[in-house]
Amino acid sequence: MPRIPRKQTPDPRKKKHERVRPQDKRYWKYEWRKLRNTFIKNNPLCNHCGRLAEMVDHIQPVRLGGDFTDIDNLQSLCNRCHAKKSGAEAHMG
Image (cartoon, rainbow, N blue to C red; front, top):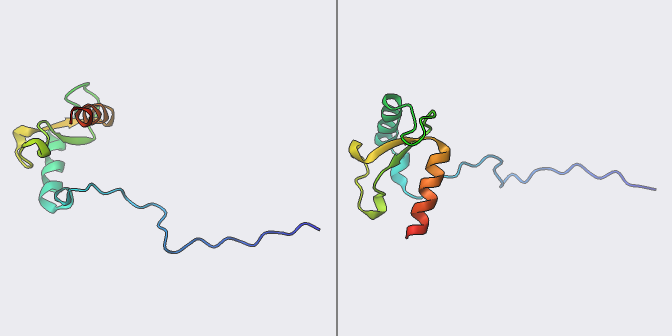
């Protein structure tokens, strides 16, 4: 005779929708969030394609010497253009 399986209770240690946090903790500070929100409000379109921007990106990567909070080093990008740019930078070194 077939058995009805018991209800599986979820593991309380696992979080269902855990956010992926960037490694650099500066992105979670109030100053960056405020700068990002102001920048994207003033520059709502993607610098590359003109779509609605969702990301604020560093033109010169911070790891390569770009200034983290310099407005001249920031640009608004949509997710697609940001992924392209980040992928190209990752392959450059």
